[in-house]
Image (tube, rainbow, N blue to C red; front, side, top):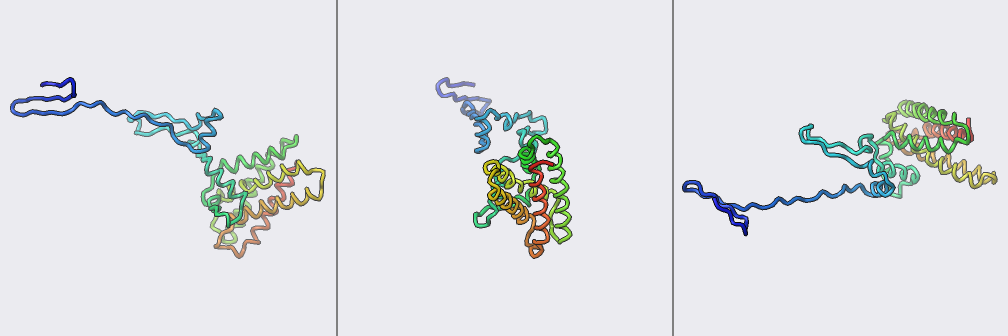
Length: 236
């Protein structure tokens, strides 16, 4: 057996056979940080990067890796942000795939929107939060039952998500009313437009082509639900 120090070549002589080869250092590539997109960059800059961190476990433990906390909780920030844009801009010509709000429902996004509306509606009355959460849960149940009676193929979780996300126009309306509270004619117009905005956004997502001709029968209860939501804005 002989080895060349300059080239690292090894030659092994065994009986009448010889084996030769090169010993090379393994190429160790460093793992780059995961690319979490715009939301990931924003979270890391604000010191919340630990939400996206994950630790590798040994191969002996079923060869699985631990998931980030947001993924464990089934929270997709990009998906939530896209759904919010779909609700705020219910115009087909803009090219948004608005059906994703209905076809891919989630829980955390609507819950945050409902809680945000509850916070906006507080004004010193904490009990309004429980009323809004109750109306969200049971109001969505009523809309779900009406949709099924009318022949719609929609699930309760889909109604829960759509009704929750569609409260965003009411949050914007409530913020605008703070600026024009003393101008009653304009305040009335803003309130009316906000309720119609929310109702149209929710109805256009819940009602599909299978029972589109019955859309007014479902739009009216949705409109009444958002009227009641906005009546809670000033307290119970």
